[in-house]
Length: 201
Image 1 (cartoon, helix red, strand yellow):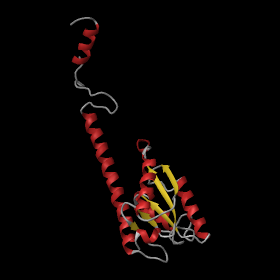
Image 2: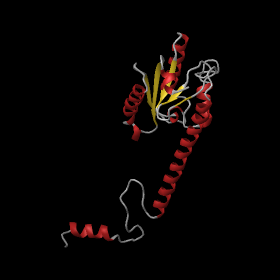
Image 3: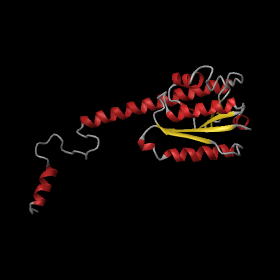
Image 4: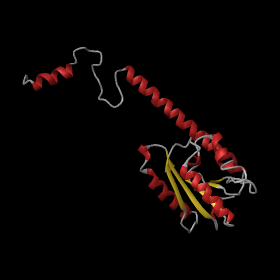
């Protein structure tokens, strides 16, 4: 199934997520980008937006849970429902958790998968399969992209921590100015400043 086919005649719930306060400003950017992507794929309505700042490794997310509940309500009303994401990592950064969130939240019979509500990744142009509508490509690539993205984050985190340790060994402490003479008891820069302040040129 293509993204355009999934979106045709559907009620679209759009989920946006950022992890850190440094990314706080990107929630409106994600909302705008998702709306533009949906429009370019032929969706003519307005998506319902669910946005939050929280780690993608947390299972209990207020807006994600609210979106799942809303999707199930609409489905019970006989509507075709689709969950739109910028990419699958907005839904989860953990390959094990994506199965819990998609097939077992809030329960197996009440899950998005069981109720034929697919996830649509707008950037990756992929639709997941559901209980009655299998999509082998989406079911293979969705979790694979989550694993790759999660691994990339862990590698970056490890590299950052390694860089901080190496900097600390060289006398550079995060959040402070560079100490050019960390091992000198008489710091030339500090002494120069002291002399200038005392009027010695």
